[in-house]
Image 1 (spheres, each protein chain N blue to C red):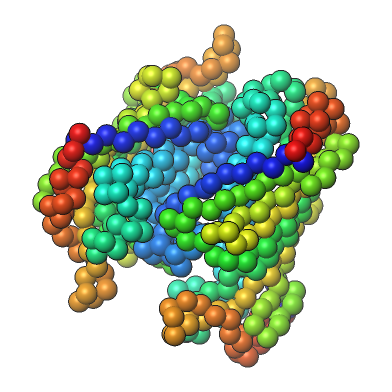
Image 2 (cartoon, rainbow over the protein chains, first blue to last red):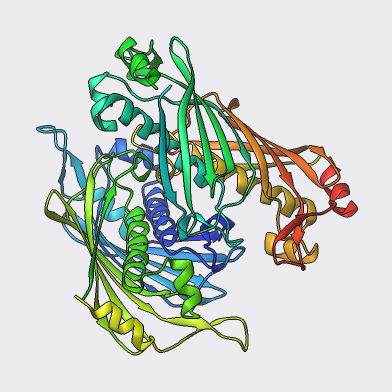
Length: 139
Length: 139
Length: 139
Length: 139
């Protein structure tokens, strides 16, 4: 599977009065990392791939995280993101955040592939296009 | 002019490693206070008044703020919000944030009234409805 | 166990371009709900109970969430928060977010009770005070 | 004066249900740009320069902004940041955000240089070190 790595600078604004990352920010990082994985796999920006695949996003069904080592403002952390399972219309994404080489935070997301439902303006699950599956699967 | 007051609890998540409010959060407070002023004046929630007046919002044109006294997590602050000037299709909003009776932060916003532009799907300025002007002007 | 309920208005600023809550915001809500549960159980504000129990917070060890029904700006949702397990120096918190009576989002947190470590200025786990256990356990 | 430029990708999480940047985010960008200007001028990261100059930060006294062109998720914008005036213990910072070459948002900040006040644990204004003035003034 394709693994995309990003270096993220922990900003002052991501930290709380204890001087460590306010944990909901990790989900903001992870969300951006999922988008970056798709951008790299599909060779398009997010606005472009939403249009190209006529799809409405990949809303989260569930998420699990473990917080092992605290991170602080000024830290440059590395996040490795990859797909761990691809199903017909849903998939799992793994994020592993490293601080100086040590695993600091781990996140696992289950997401569904959705398209706009012309009938009612809402969204409904749809099969992940074969082309997308192939591009995400490349090592 | 109508003045709307809100008590806001400064949350842990609004504060930075210095233990004081991370200042962009004040704009989040102010934005919510502007919405609350309109909700009270029009007697509708924001989703309801967007629909009722077929309007697309009141984007910010400019803002000015002064930061006089720092606020900390656990503080309960009071924000007084009022319209200071109503023009044909724009208006000024004043926010005064008090900590234990002392003026701590002051914000002034200039906003425009916009509607969806059917021609291109964008937005364009529109006159503020007379009914809205009257309701905001009541003391 | 004590259950604390909070009504939270989904704000415009909590929603993304799809018009639904940007999911990291749920963790901001949940974090505030955990603080509110402790405030109610201990009869003190968070700054007060941090001081009273000479404790440094309850950092998150892990979290799990399920997203069942999307919520939108203007929704008033109800979050029920309670402790589901109390151990010597860690505990589990459950958050159940309801939209018009239906379970929309579920969150489970495992947190540790920590005190400042005088030796090195860091933090270390400590037993949850018996008094705190009793207050959280009251129905 | 030294001008520091940053390219910032407008993230999905920075945008509201209207699909445009939720304006308090601009202040988060600007705050990070001020830190980046100092990092470049002083050749240190923010945690390093806080320590090196025994200083506690540069809290905001006032800010003014103009919002000229909306920006949307997926936009890559360029922000030019520079000092426009240096006084004894305060200074002005200008941020100009460009979208495809056009000025989209403008921000002006007045900040004070503060040090920890040993007497009471608070902060107090202090003269900007001559070395810092020289480094910020280099073109």
